[in-house]
Image 1 (cartoon, one colour):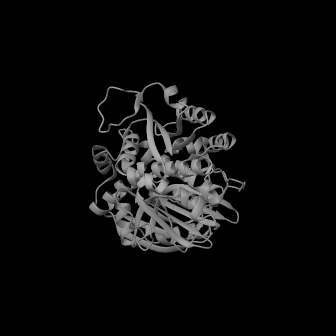
Image 2 (spheres, rainbow, N blue to C red; image 1 turned 90 degrees about the vertical axis):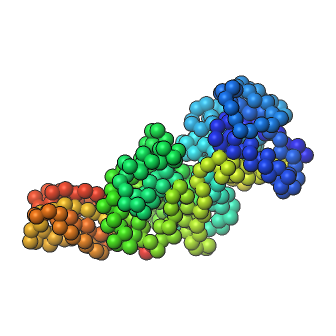
Image 3 (tube, rainbow, N blue to C red; image 1 turned 180 degrees about the vertical axis):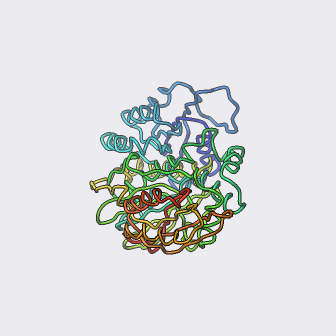
Length: 430
């Protein structure tokens, strides 16, 4: 049986799809019992040089791909919301199944697209939208389907992980490492989507929706980036036996769903603490399976191409068996979302204060009035009459922490509050 494929986009990922399909053609054909052939590829620039070749139509006309009656599967690797959304809806209406790597689109319009696929009786798969080559979508929807998932924690942005790893290991400042990441191609010229946490937030919205069977929109995710993290923070974290990562956190608790992306201090004993460089990892806890972790390259042409081809192979098997997706929308719950003020974590707080008697005692009192106690305290002199204090609280409500910080800001002996970072502890309970 021959199944023909149309590809929308021939950038880095599109070329990776072609390369993986060509280099592993024999194994893919053996495993699917069919011949997967690329029939046509849409590209805006037909003249640019490419490292791939093949017996396929290269066109700048969308209809030549979307409306070709011989094409069974459309692969969307254009990125962005439009025209990708319109093209996918068009493909589904013309009886084609779709594979996409588009996290922006799935995070914002996933429900609409899955409904359209269901109405058309076709598949919509999106394994590559989160974690590049890491097989997390199928794991949540299939392998872990018997579980009530309680926690999803992830390092799901390689750019920020590279920056924080280099800062921690080499004692360098944020701006310097960011510039290096841009030179190496790990960060875009405008790195805001990565360093401000937006890329990770989009991926977390997808993961949380799948894990908890309840719709989580991008706007539901609390987001904070890494630009305030300094060399001093990483040094203090190491002194505490910890490191700092941009962490995506989703928790399903009795009072609702908690979804947040922010820098987090992690004990070195945590499974995610050793994930370094551009690698990604996703830590999932289920009530039956317990702790699991998925690790690998979160981006790149071949890892992402691997995930896309795996989705194509699933669809090929569905076509042969005349069935449709097992990865369709399963958001059958409508769980409440926890307010930011009700998030429950420990905190690291770095302060510059006047080096005088009773300052630390007064700080302890101000926090105690908000029912917050300290797990550890570090104090170091900074000049003749100043001291830097690092406070690590026991887990508390974020709303209570903000009340305490308001009082601390008003205390005349406090010169500045230089950073506040959430502390994700393994035994932390809400």
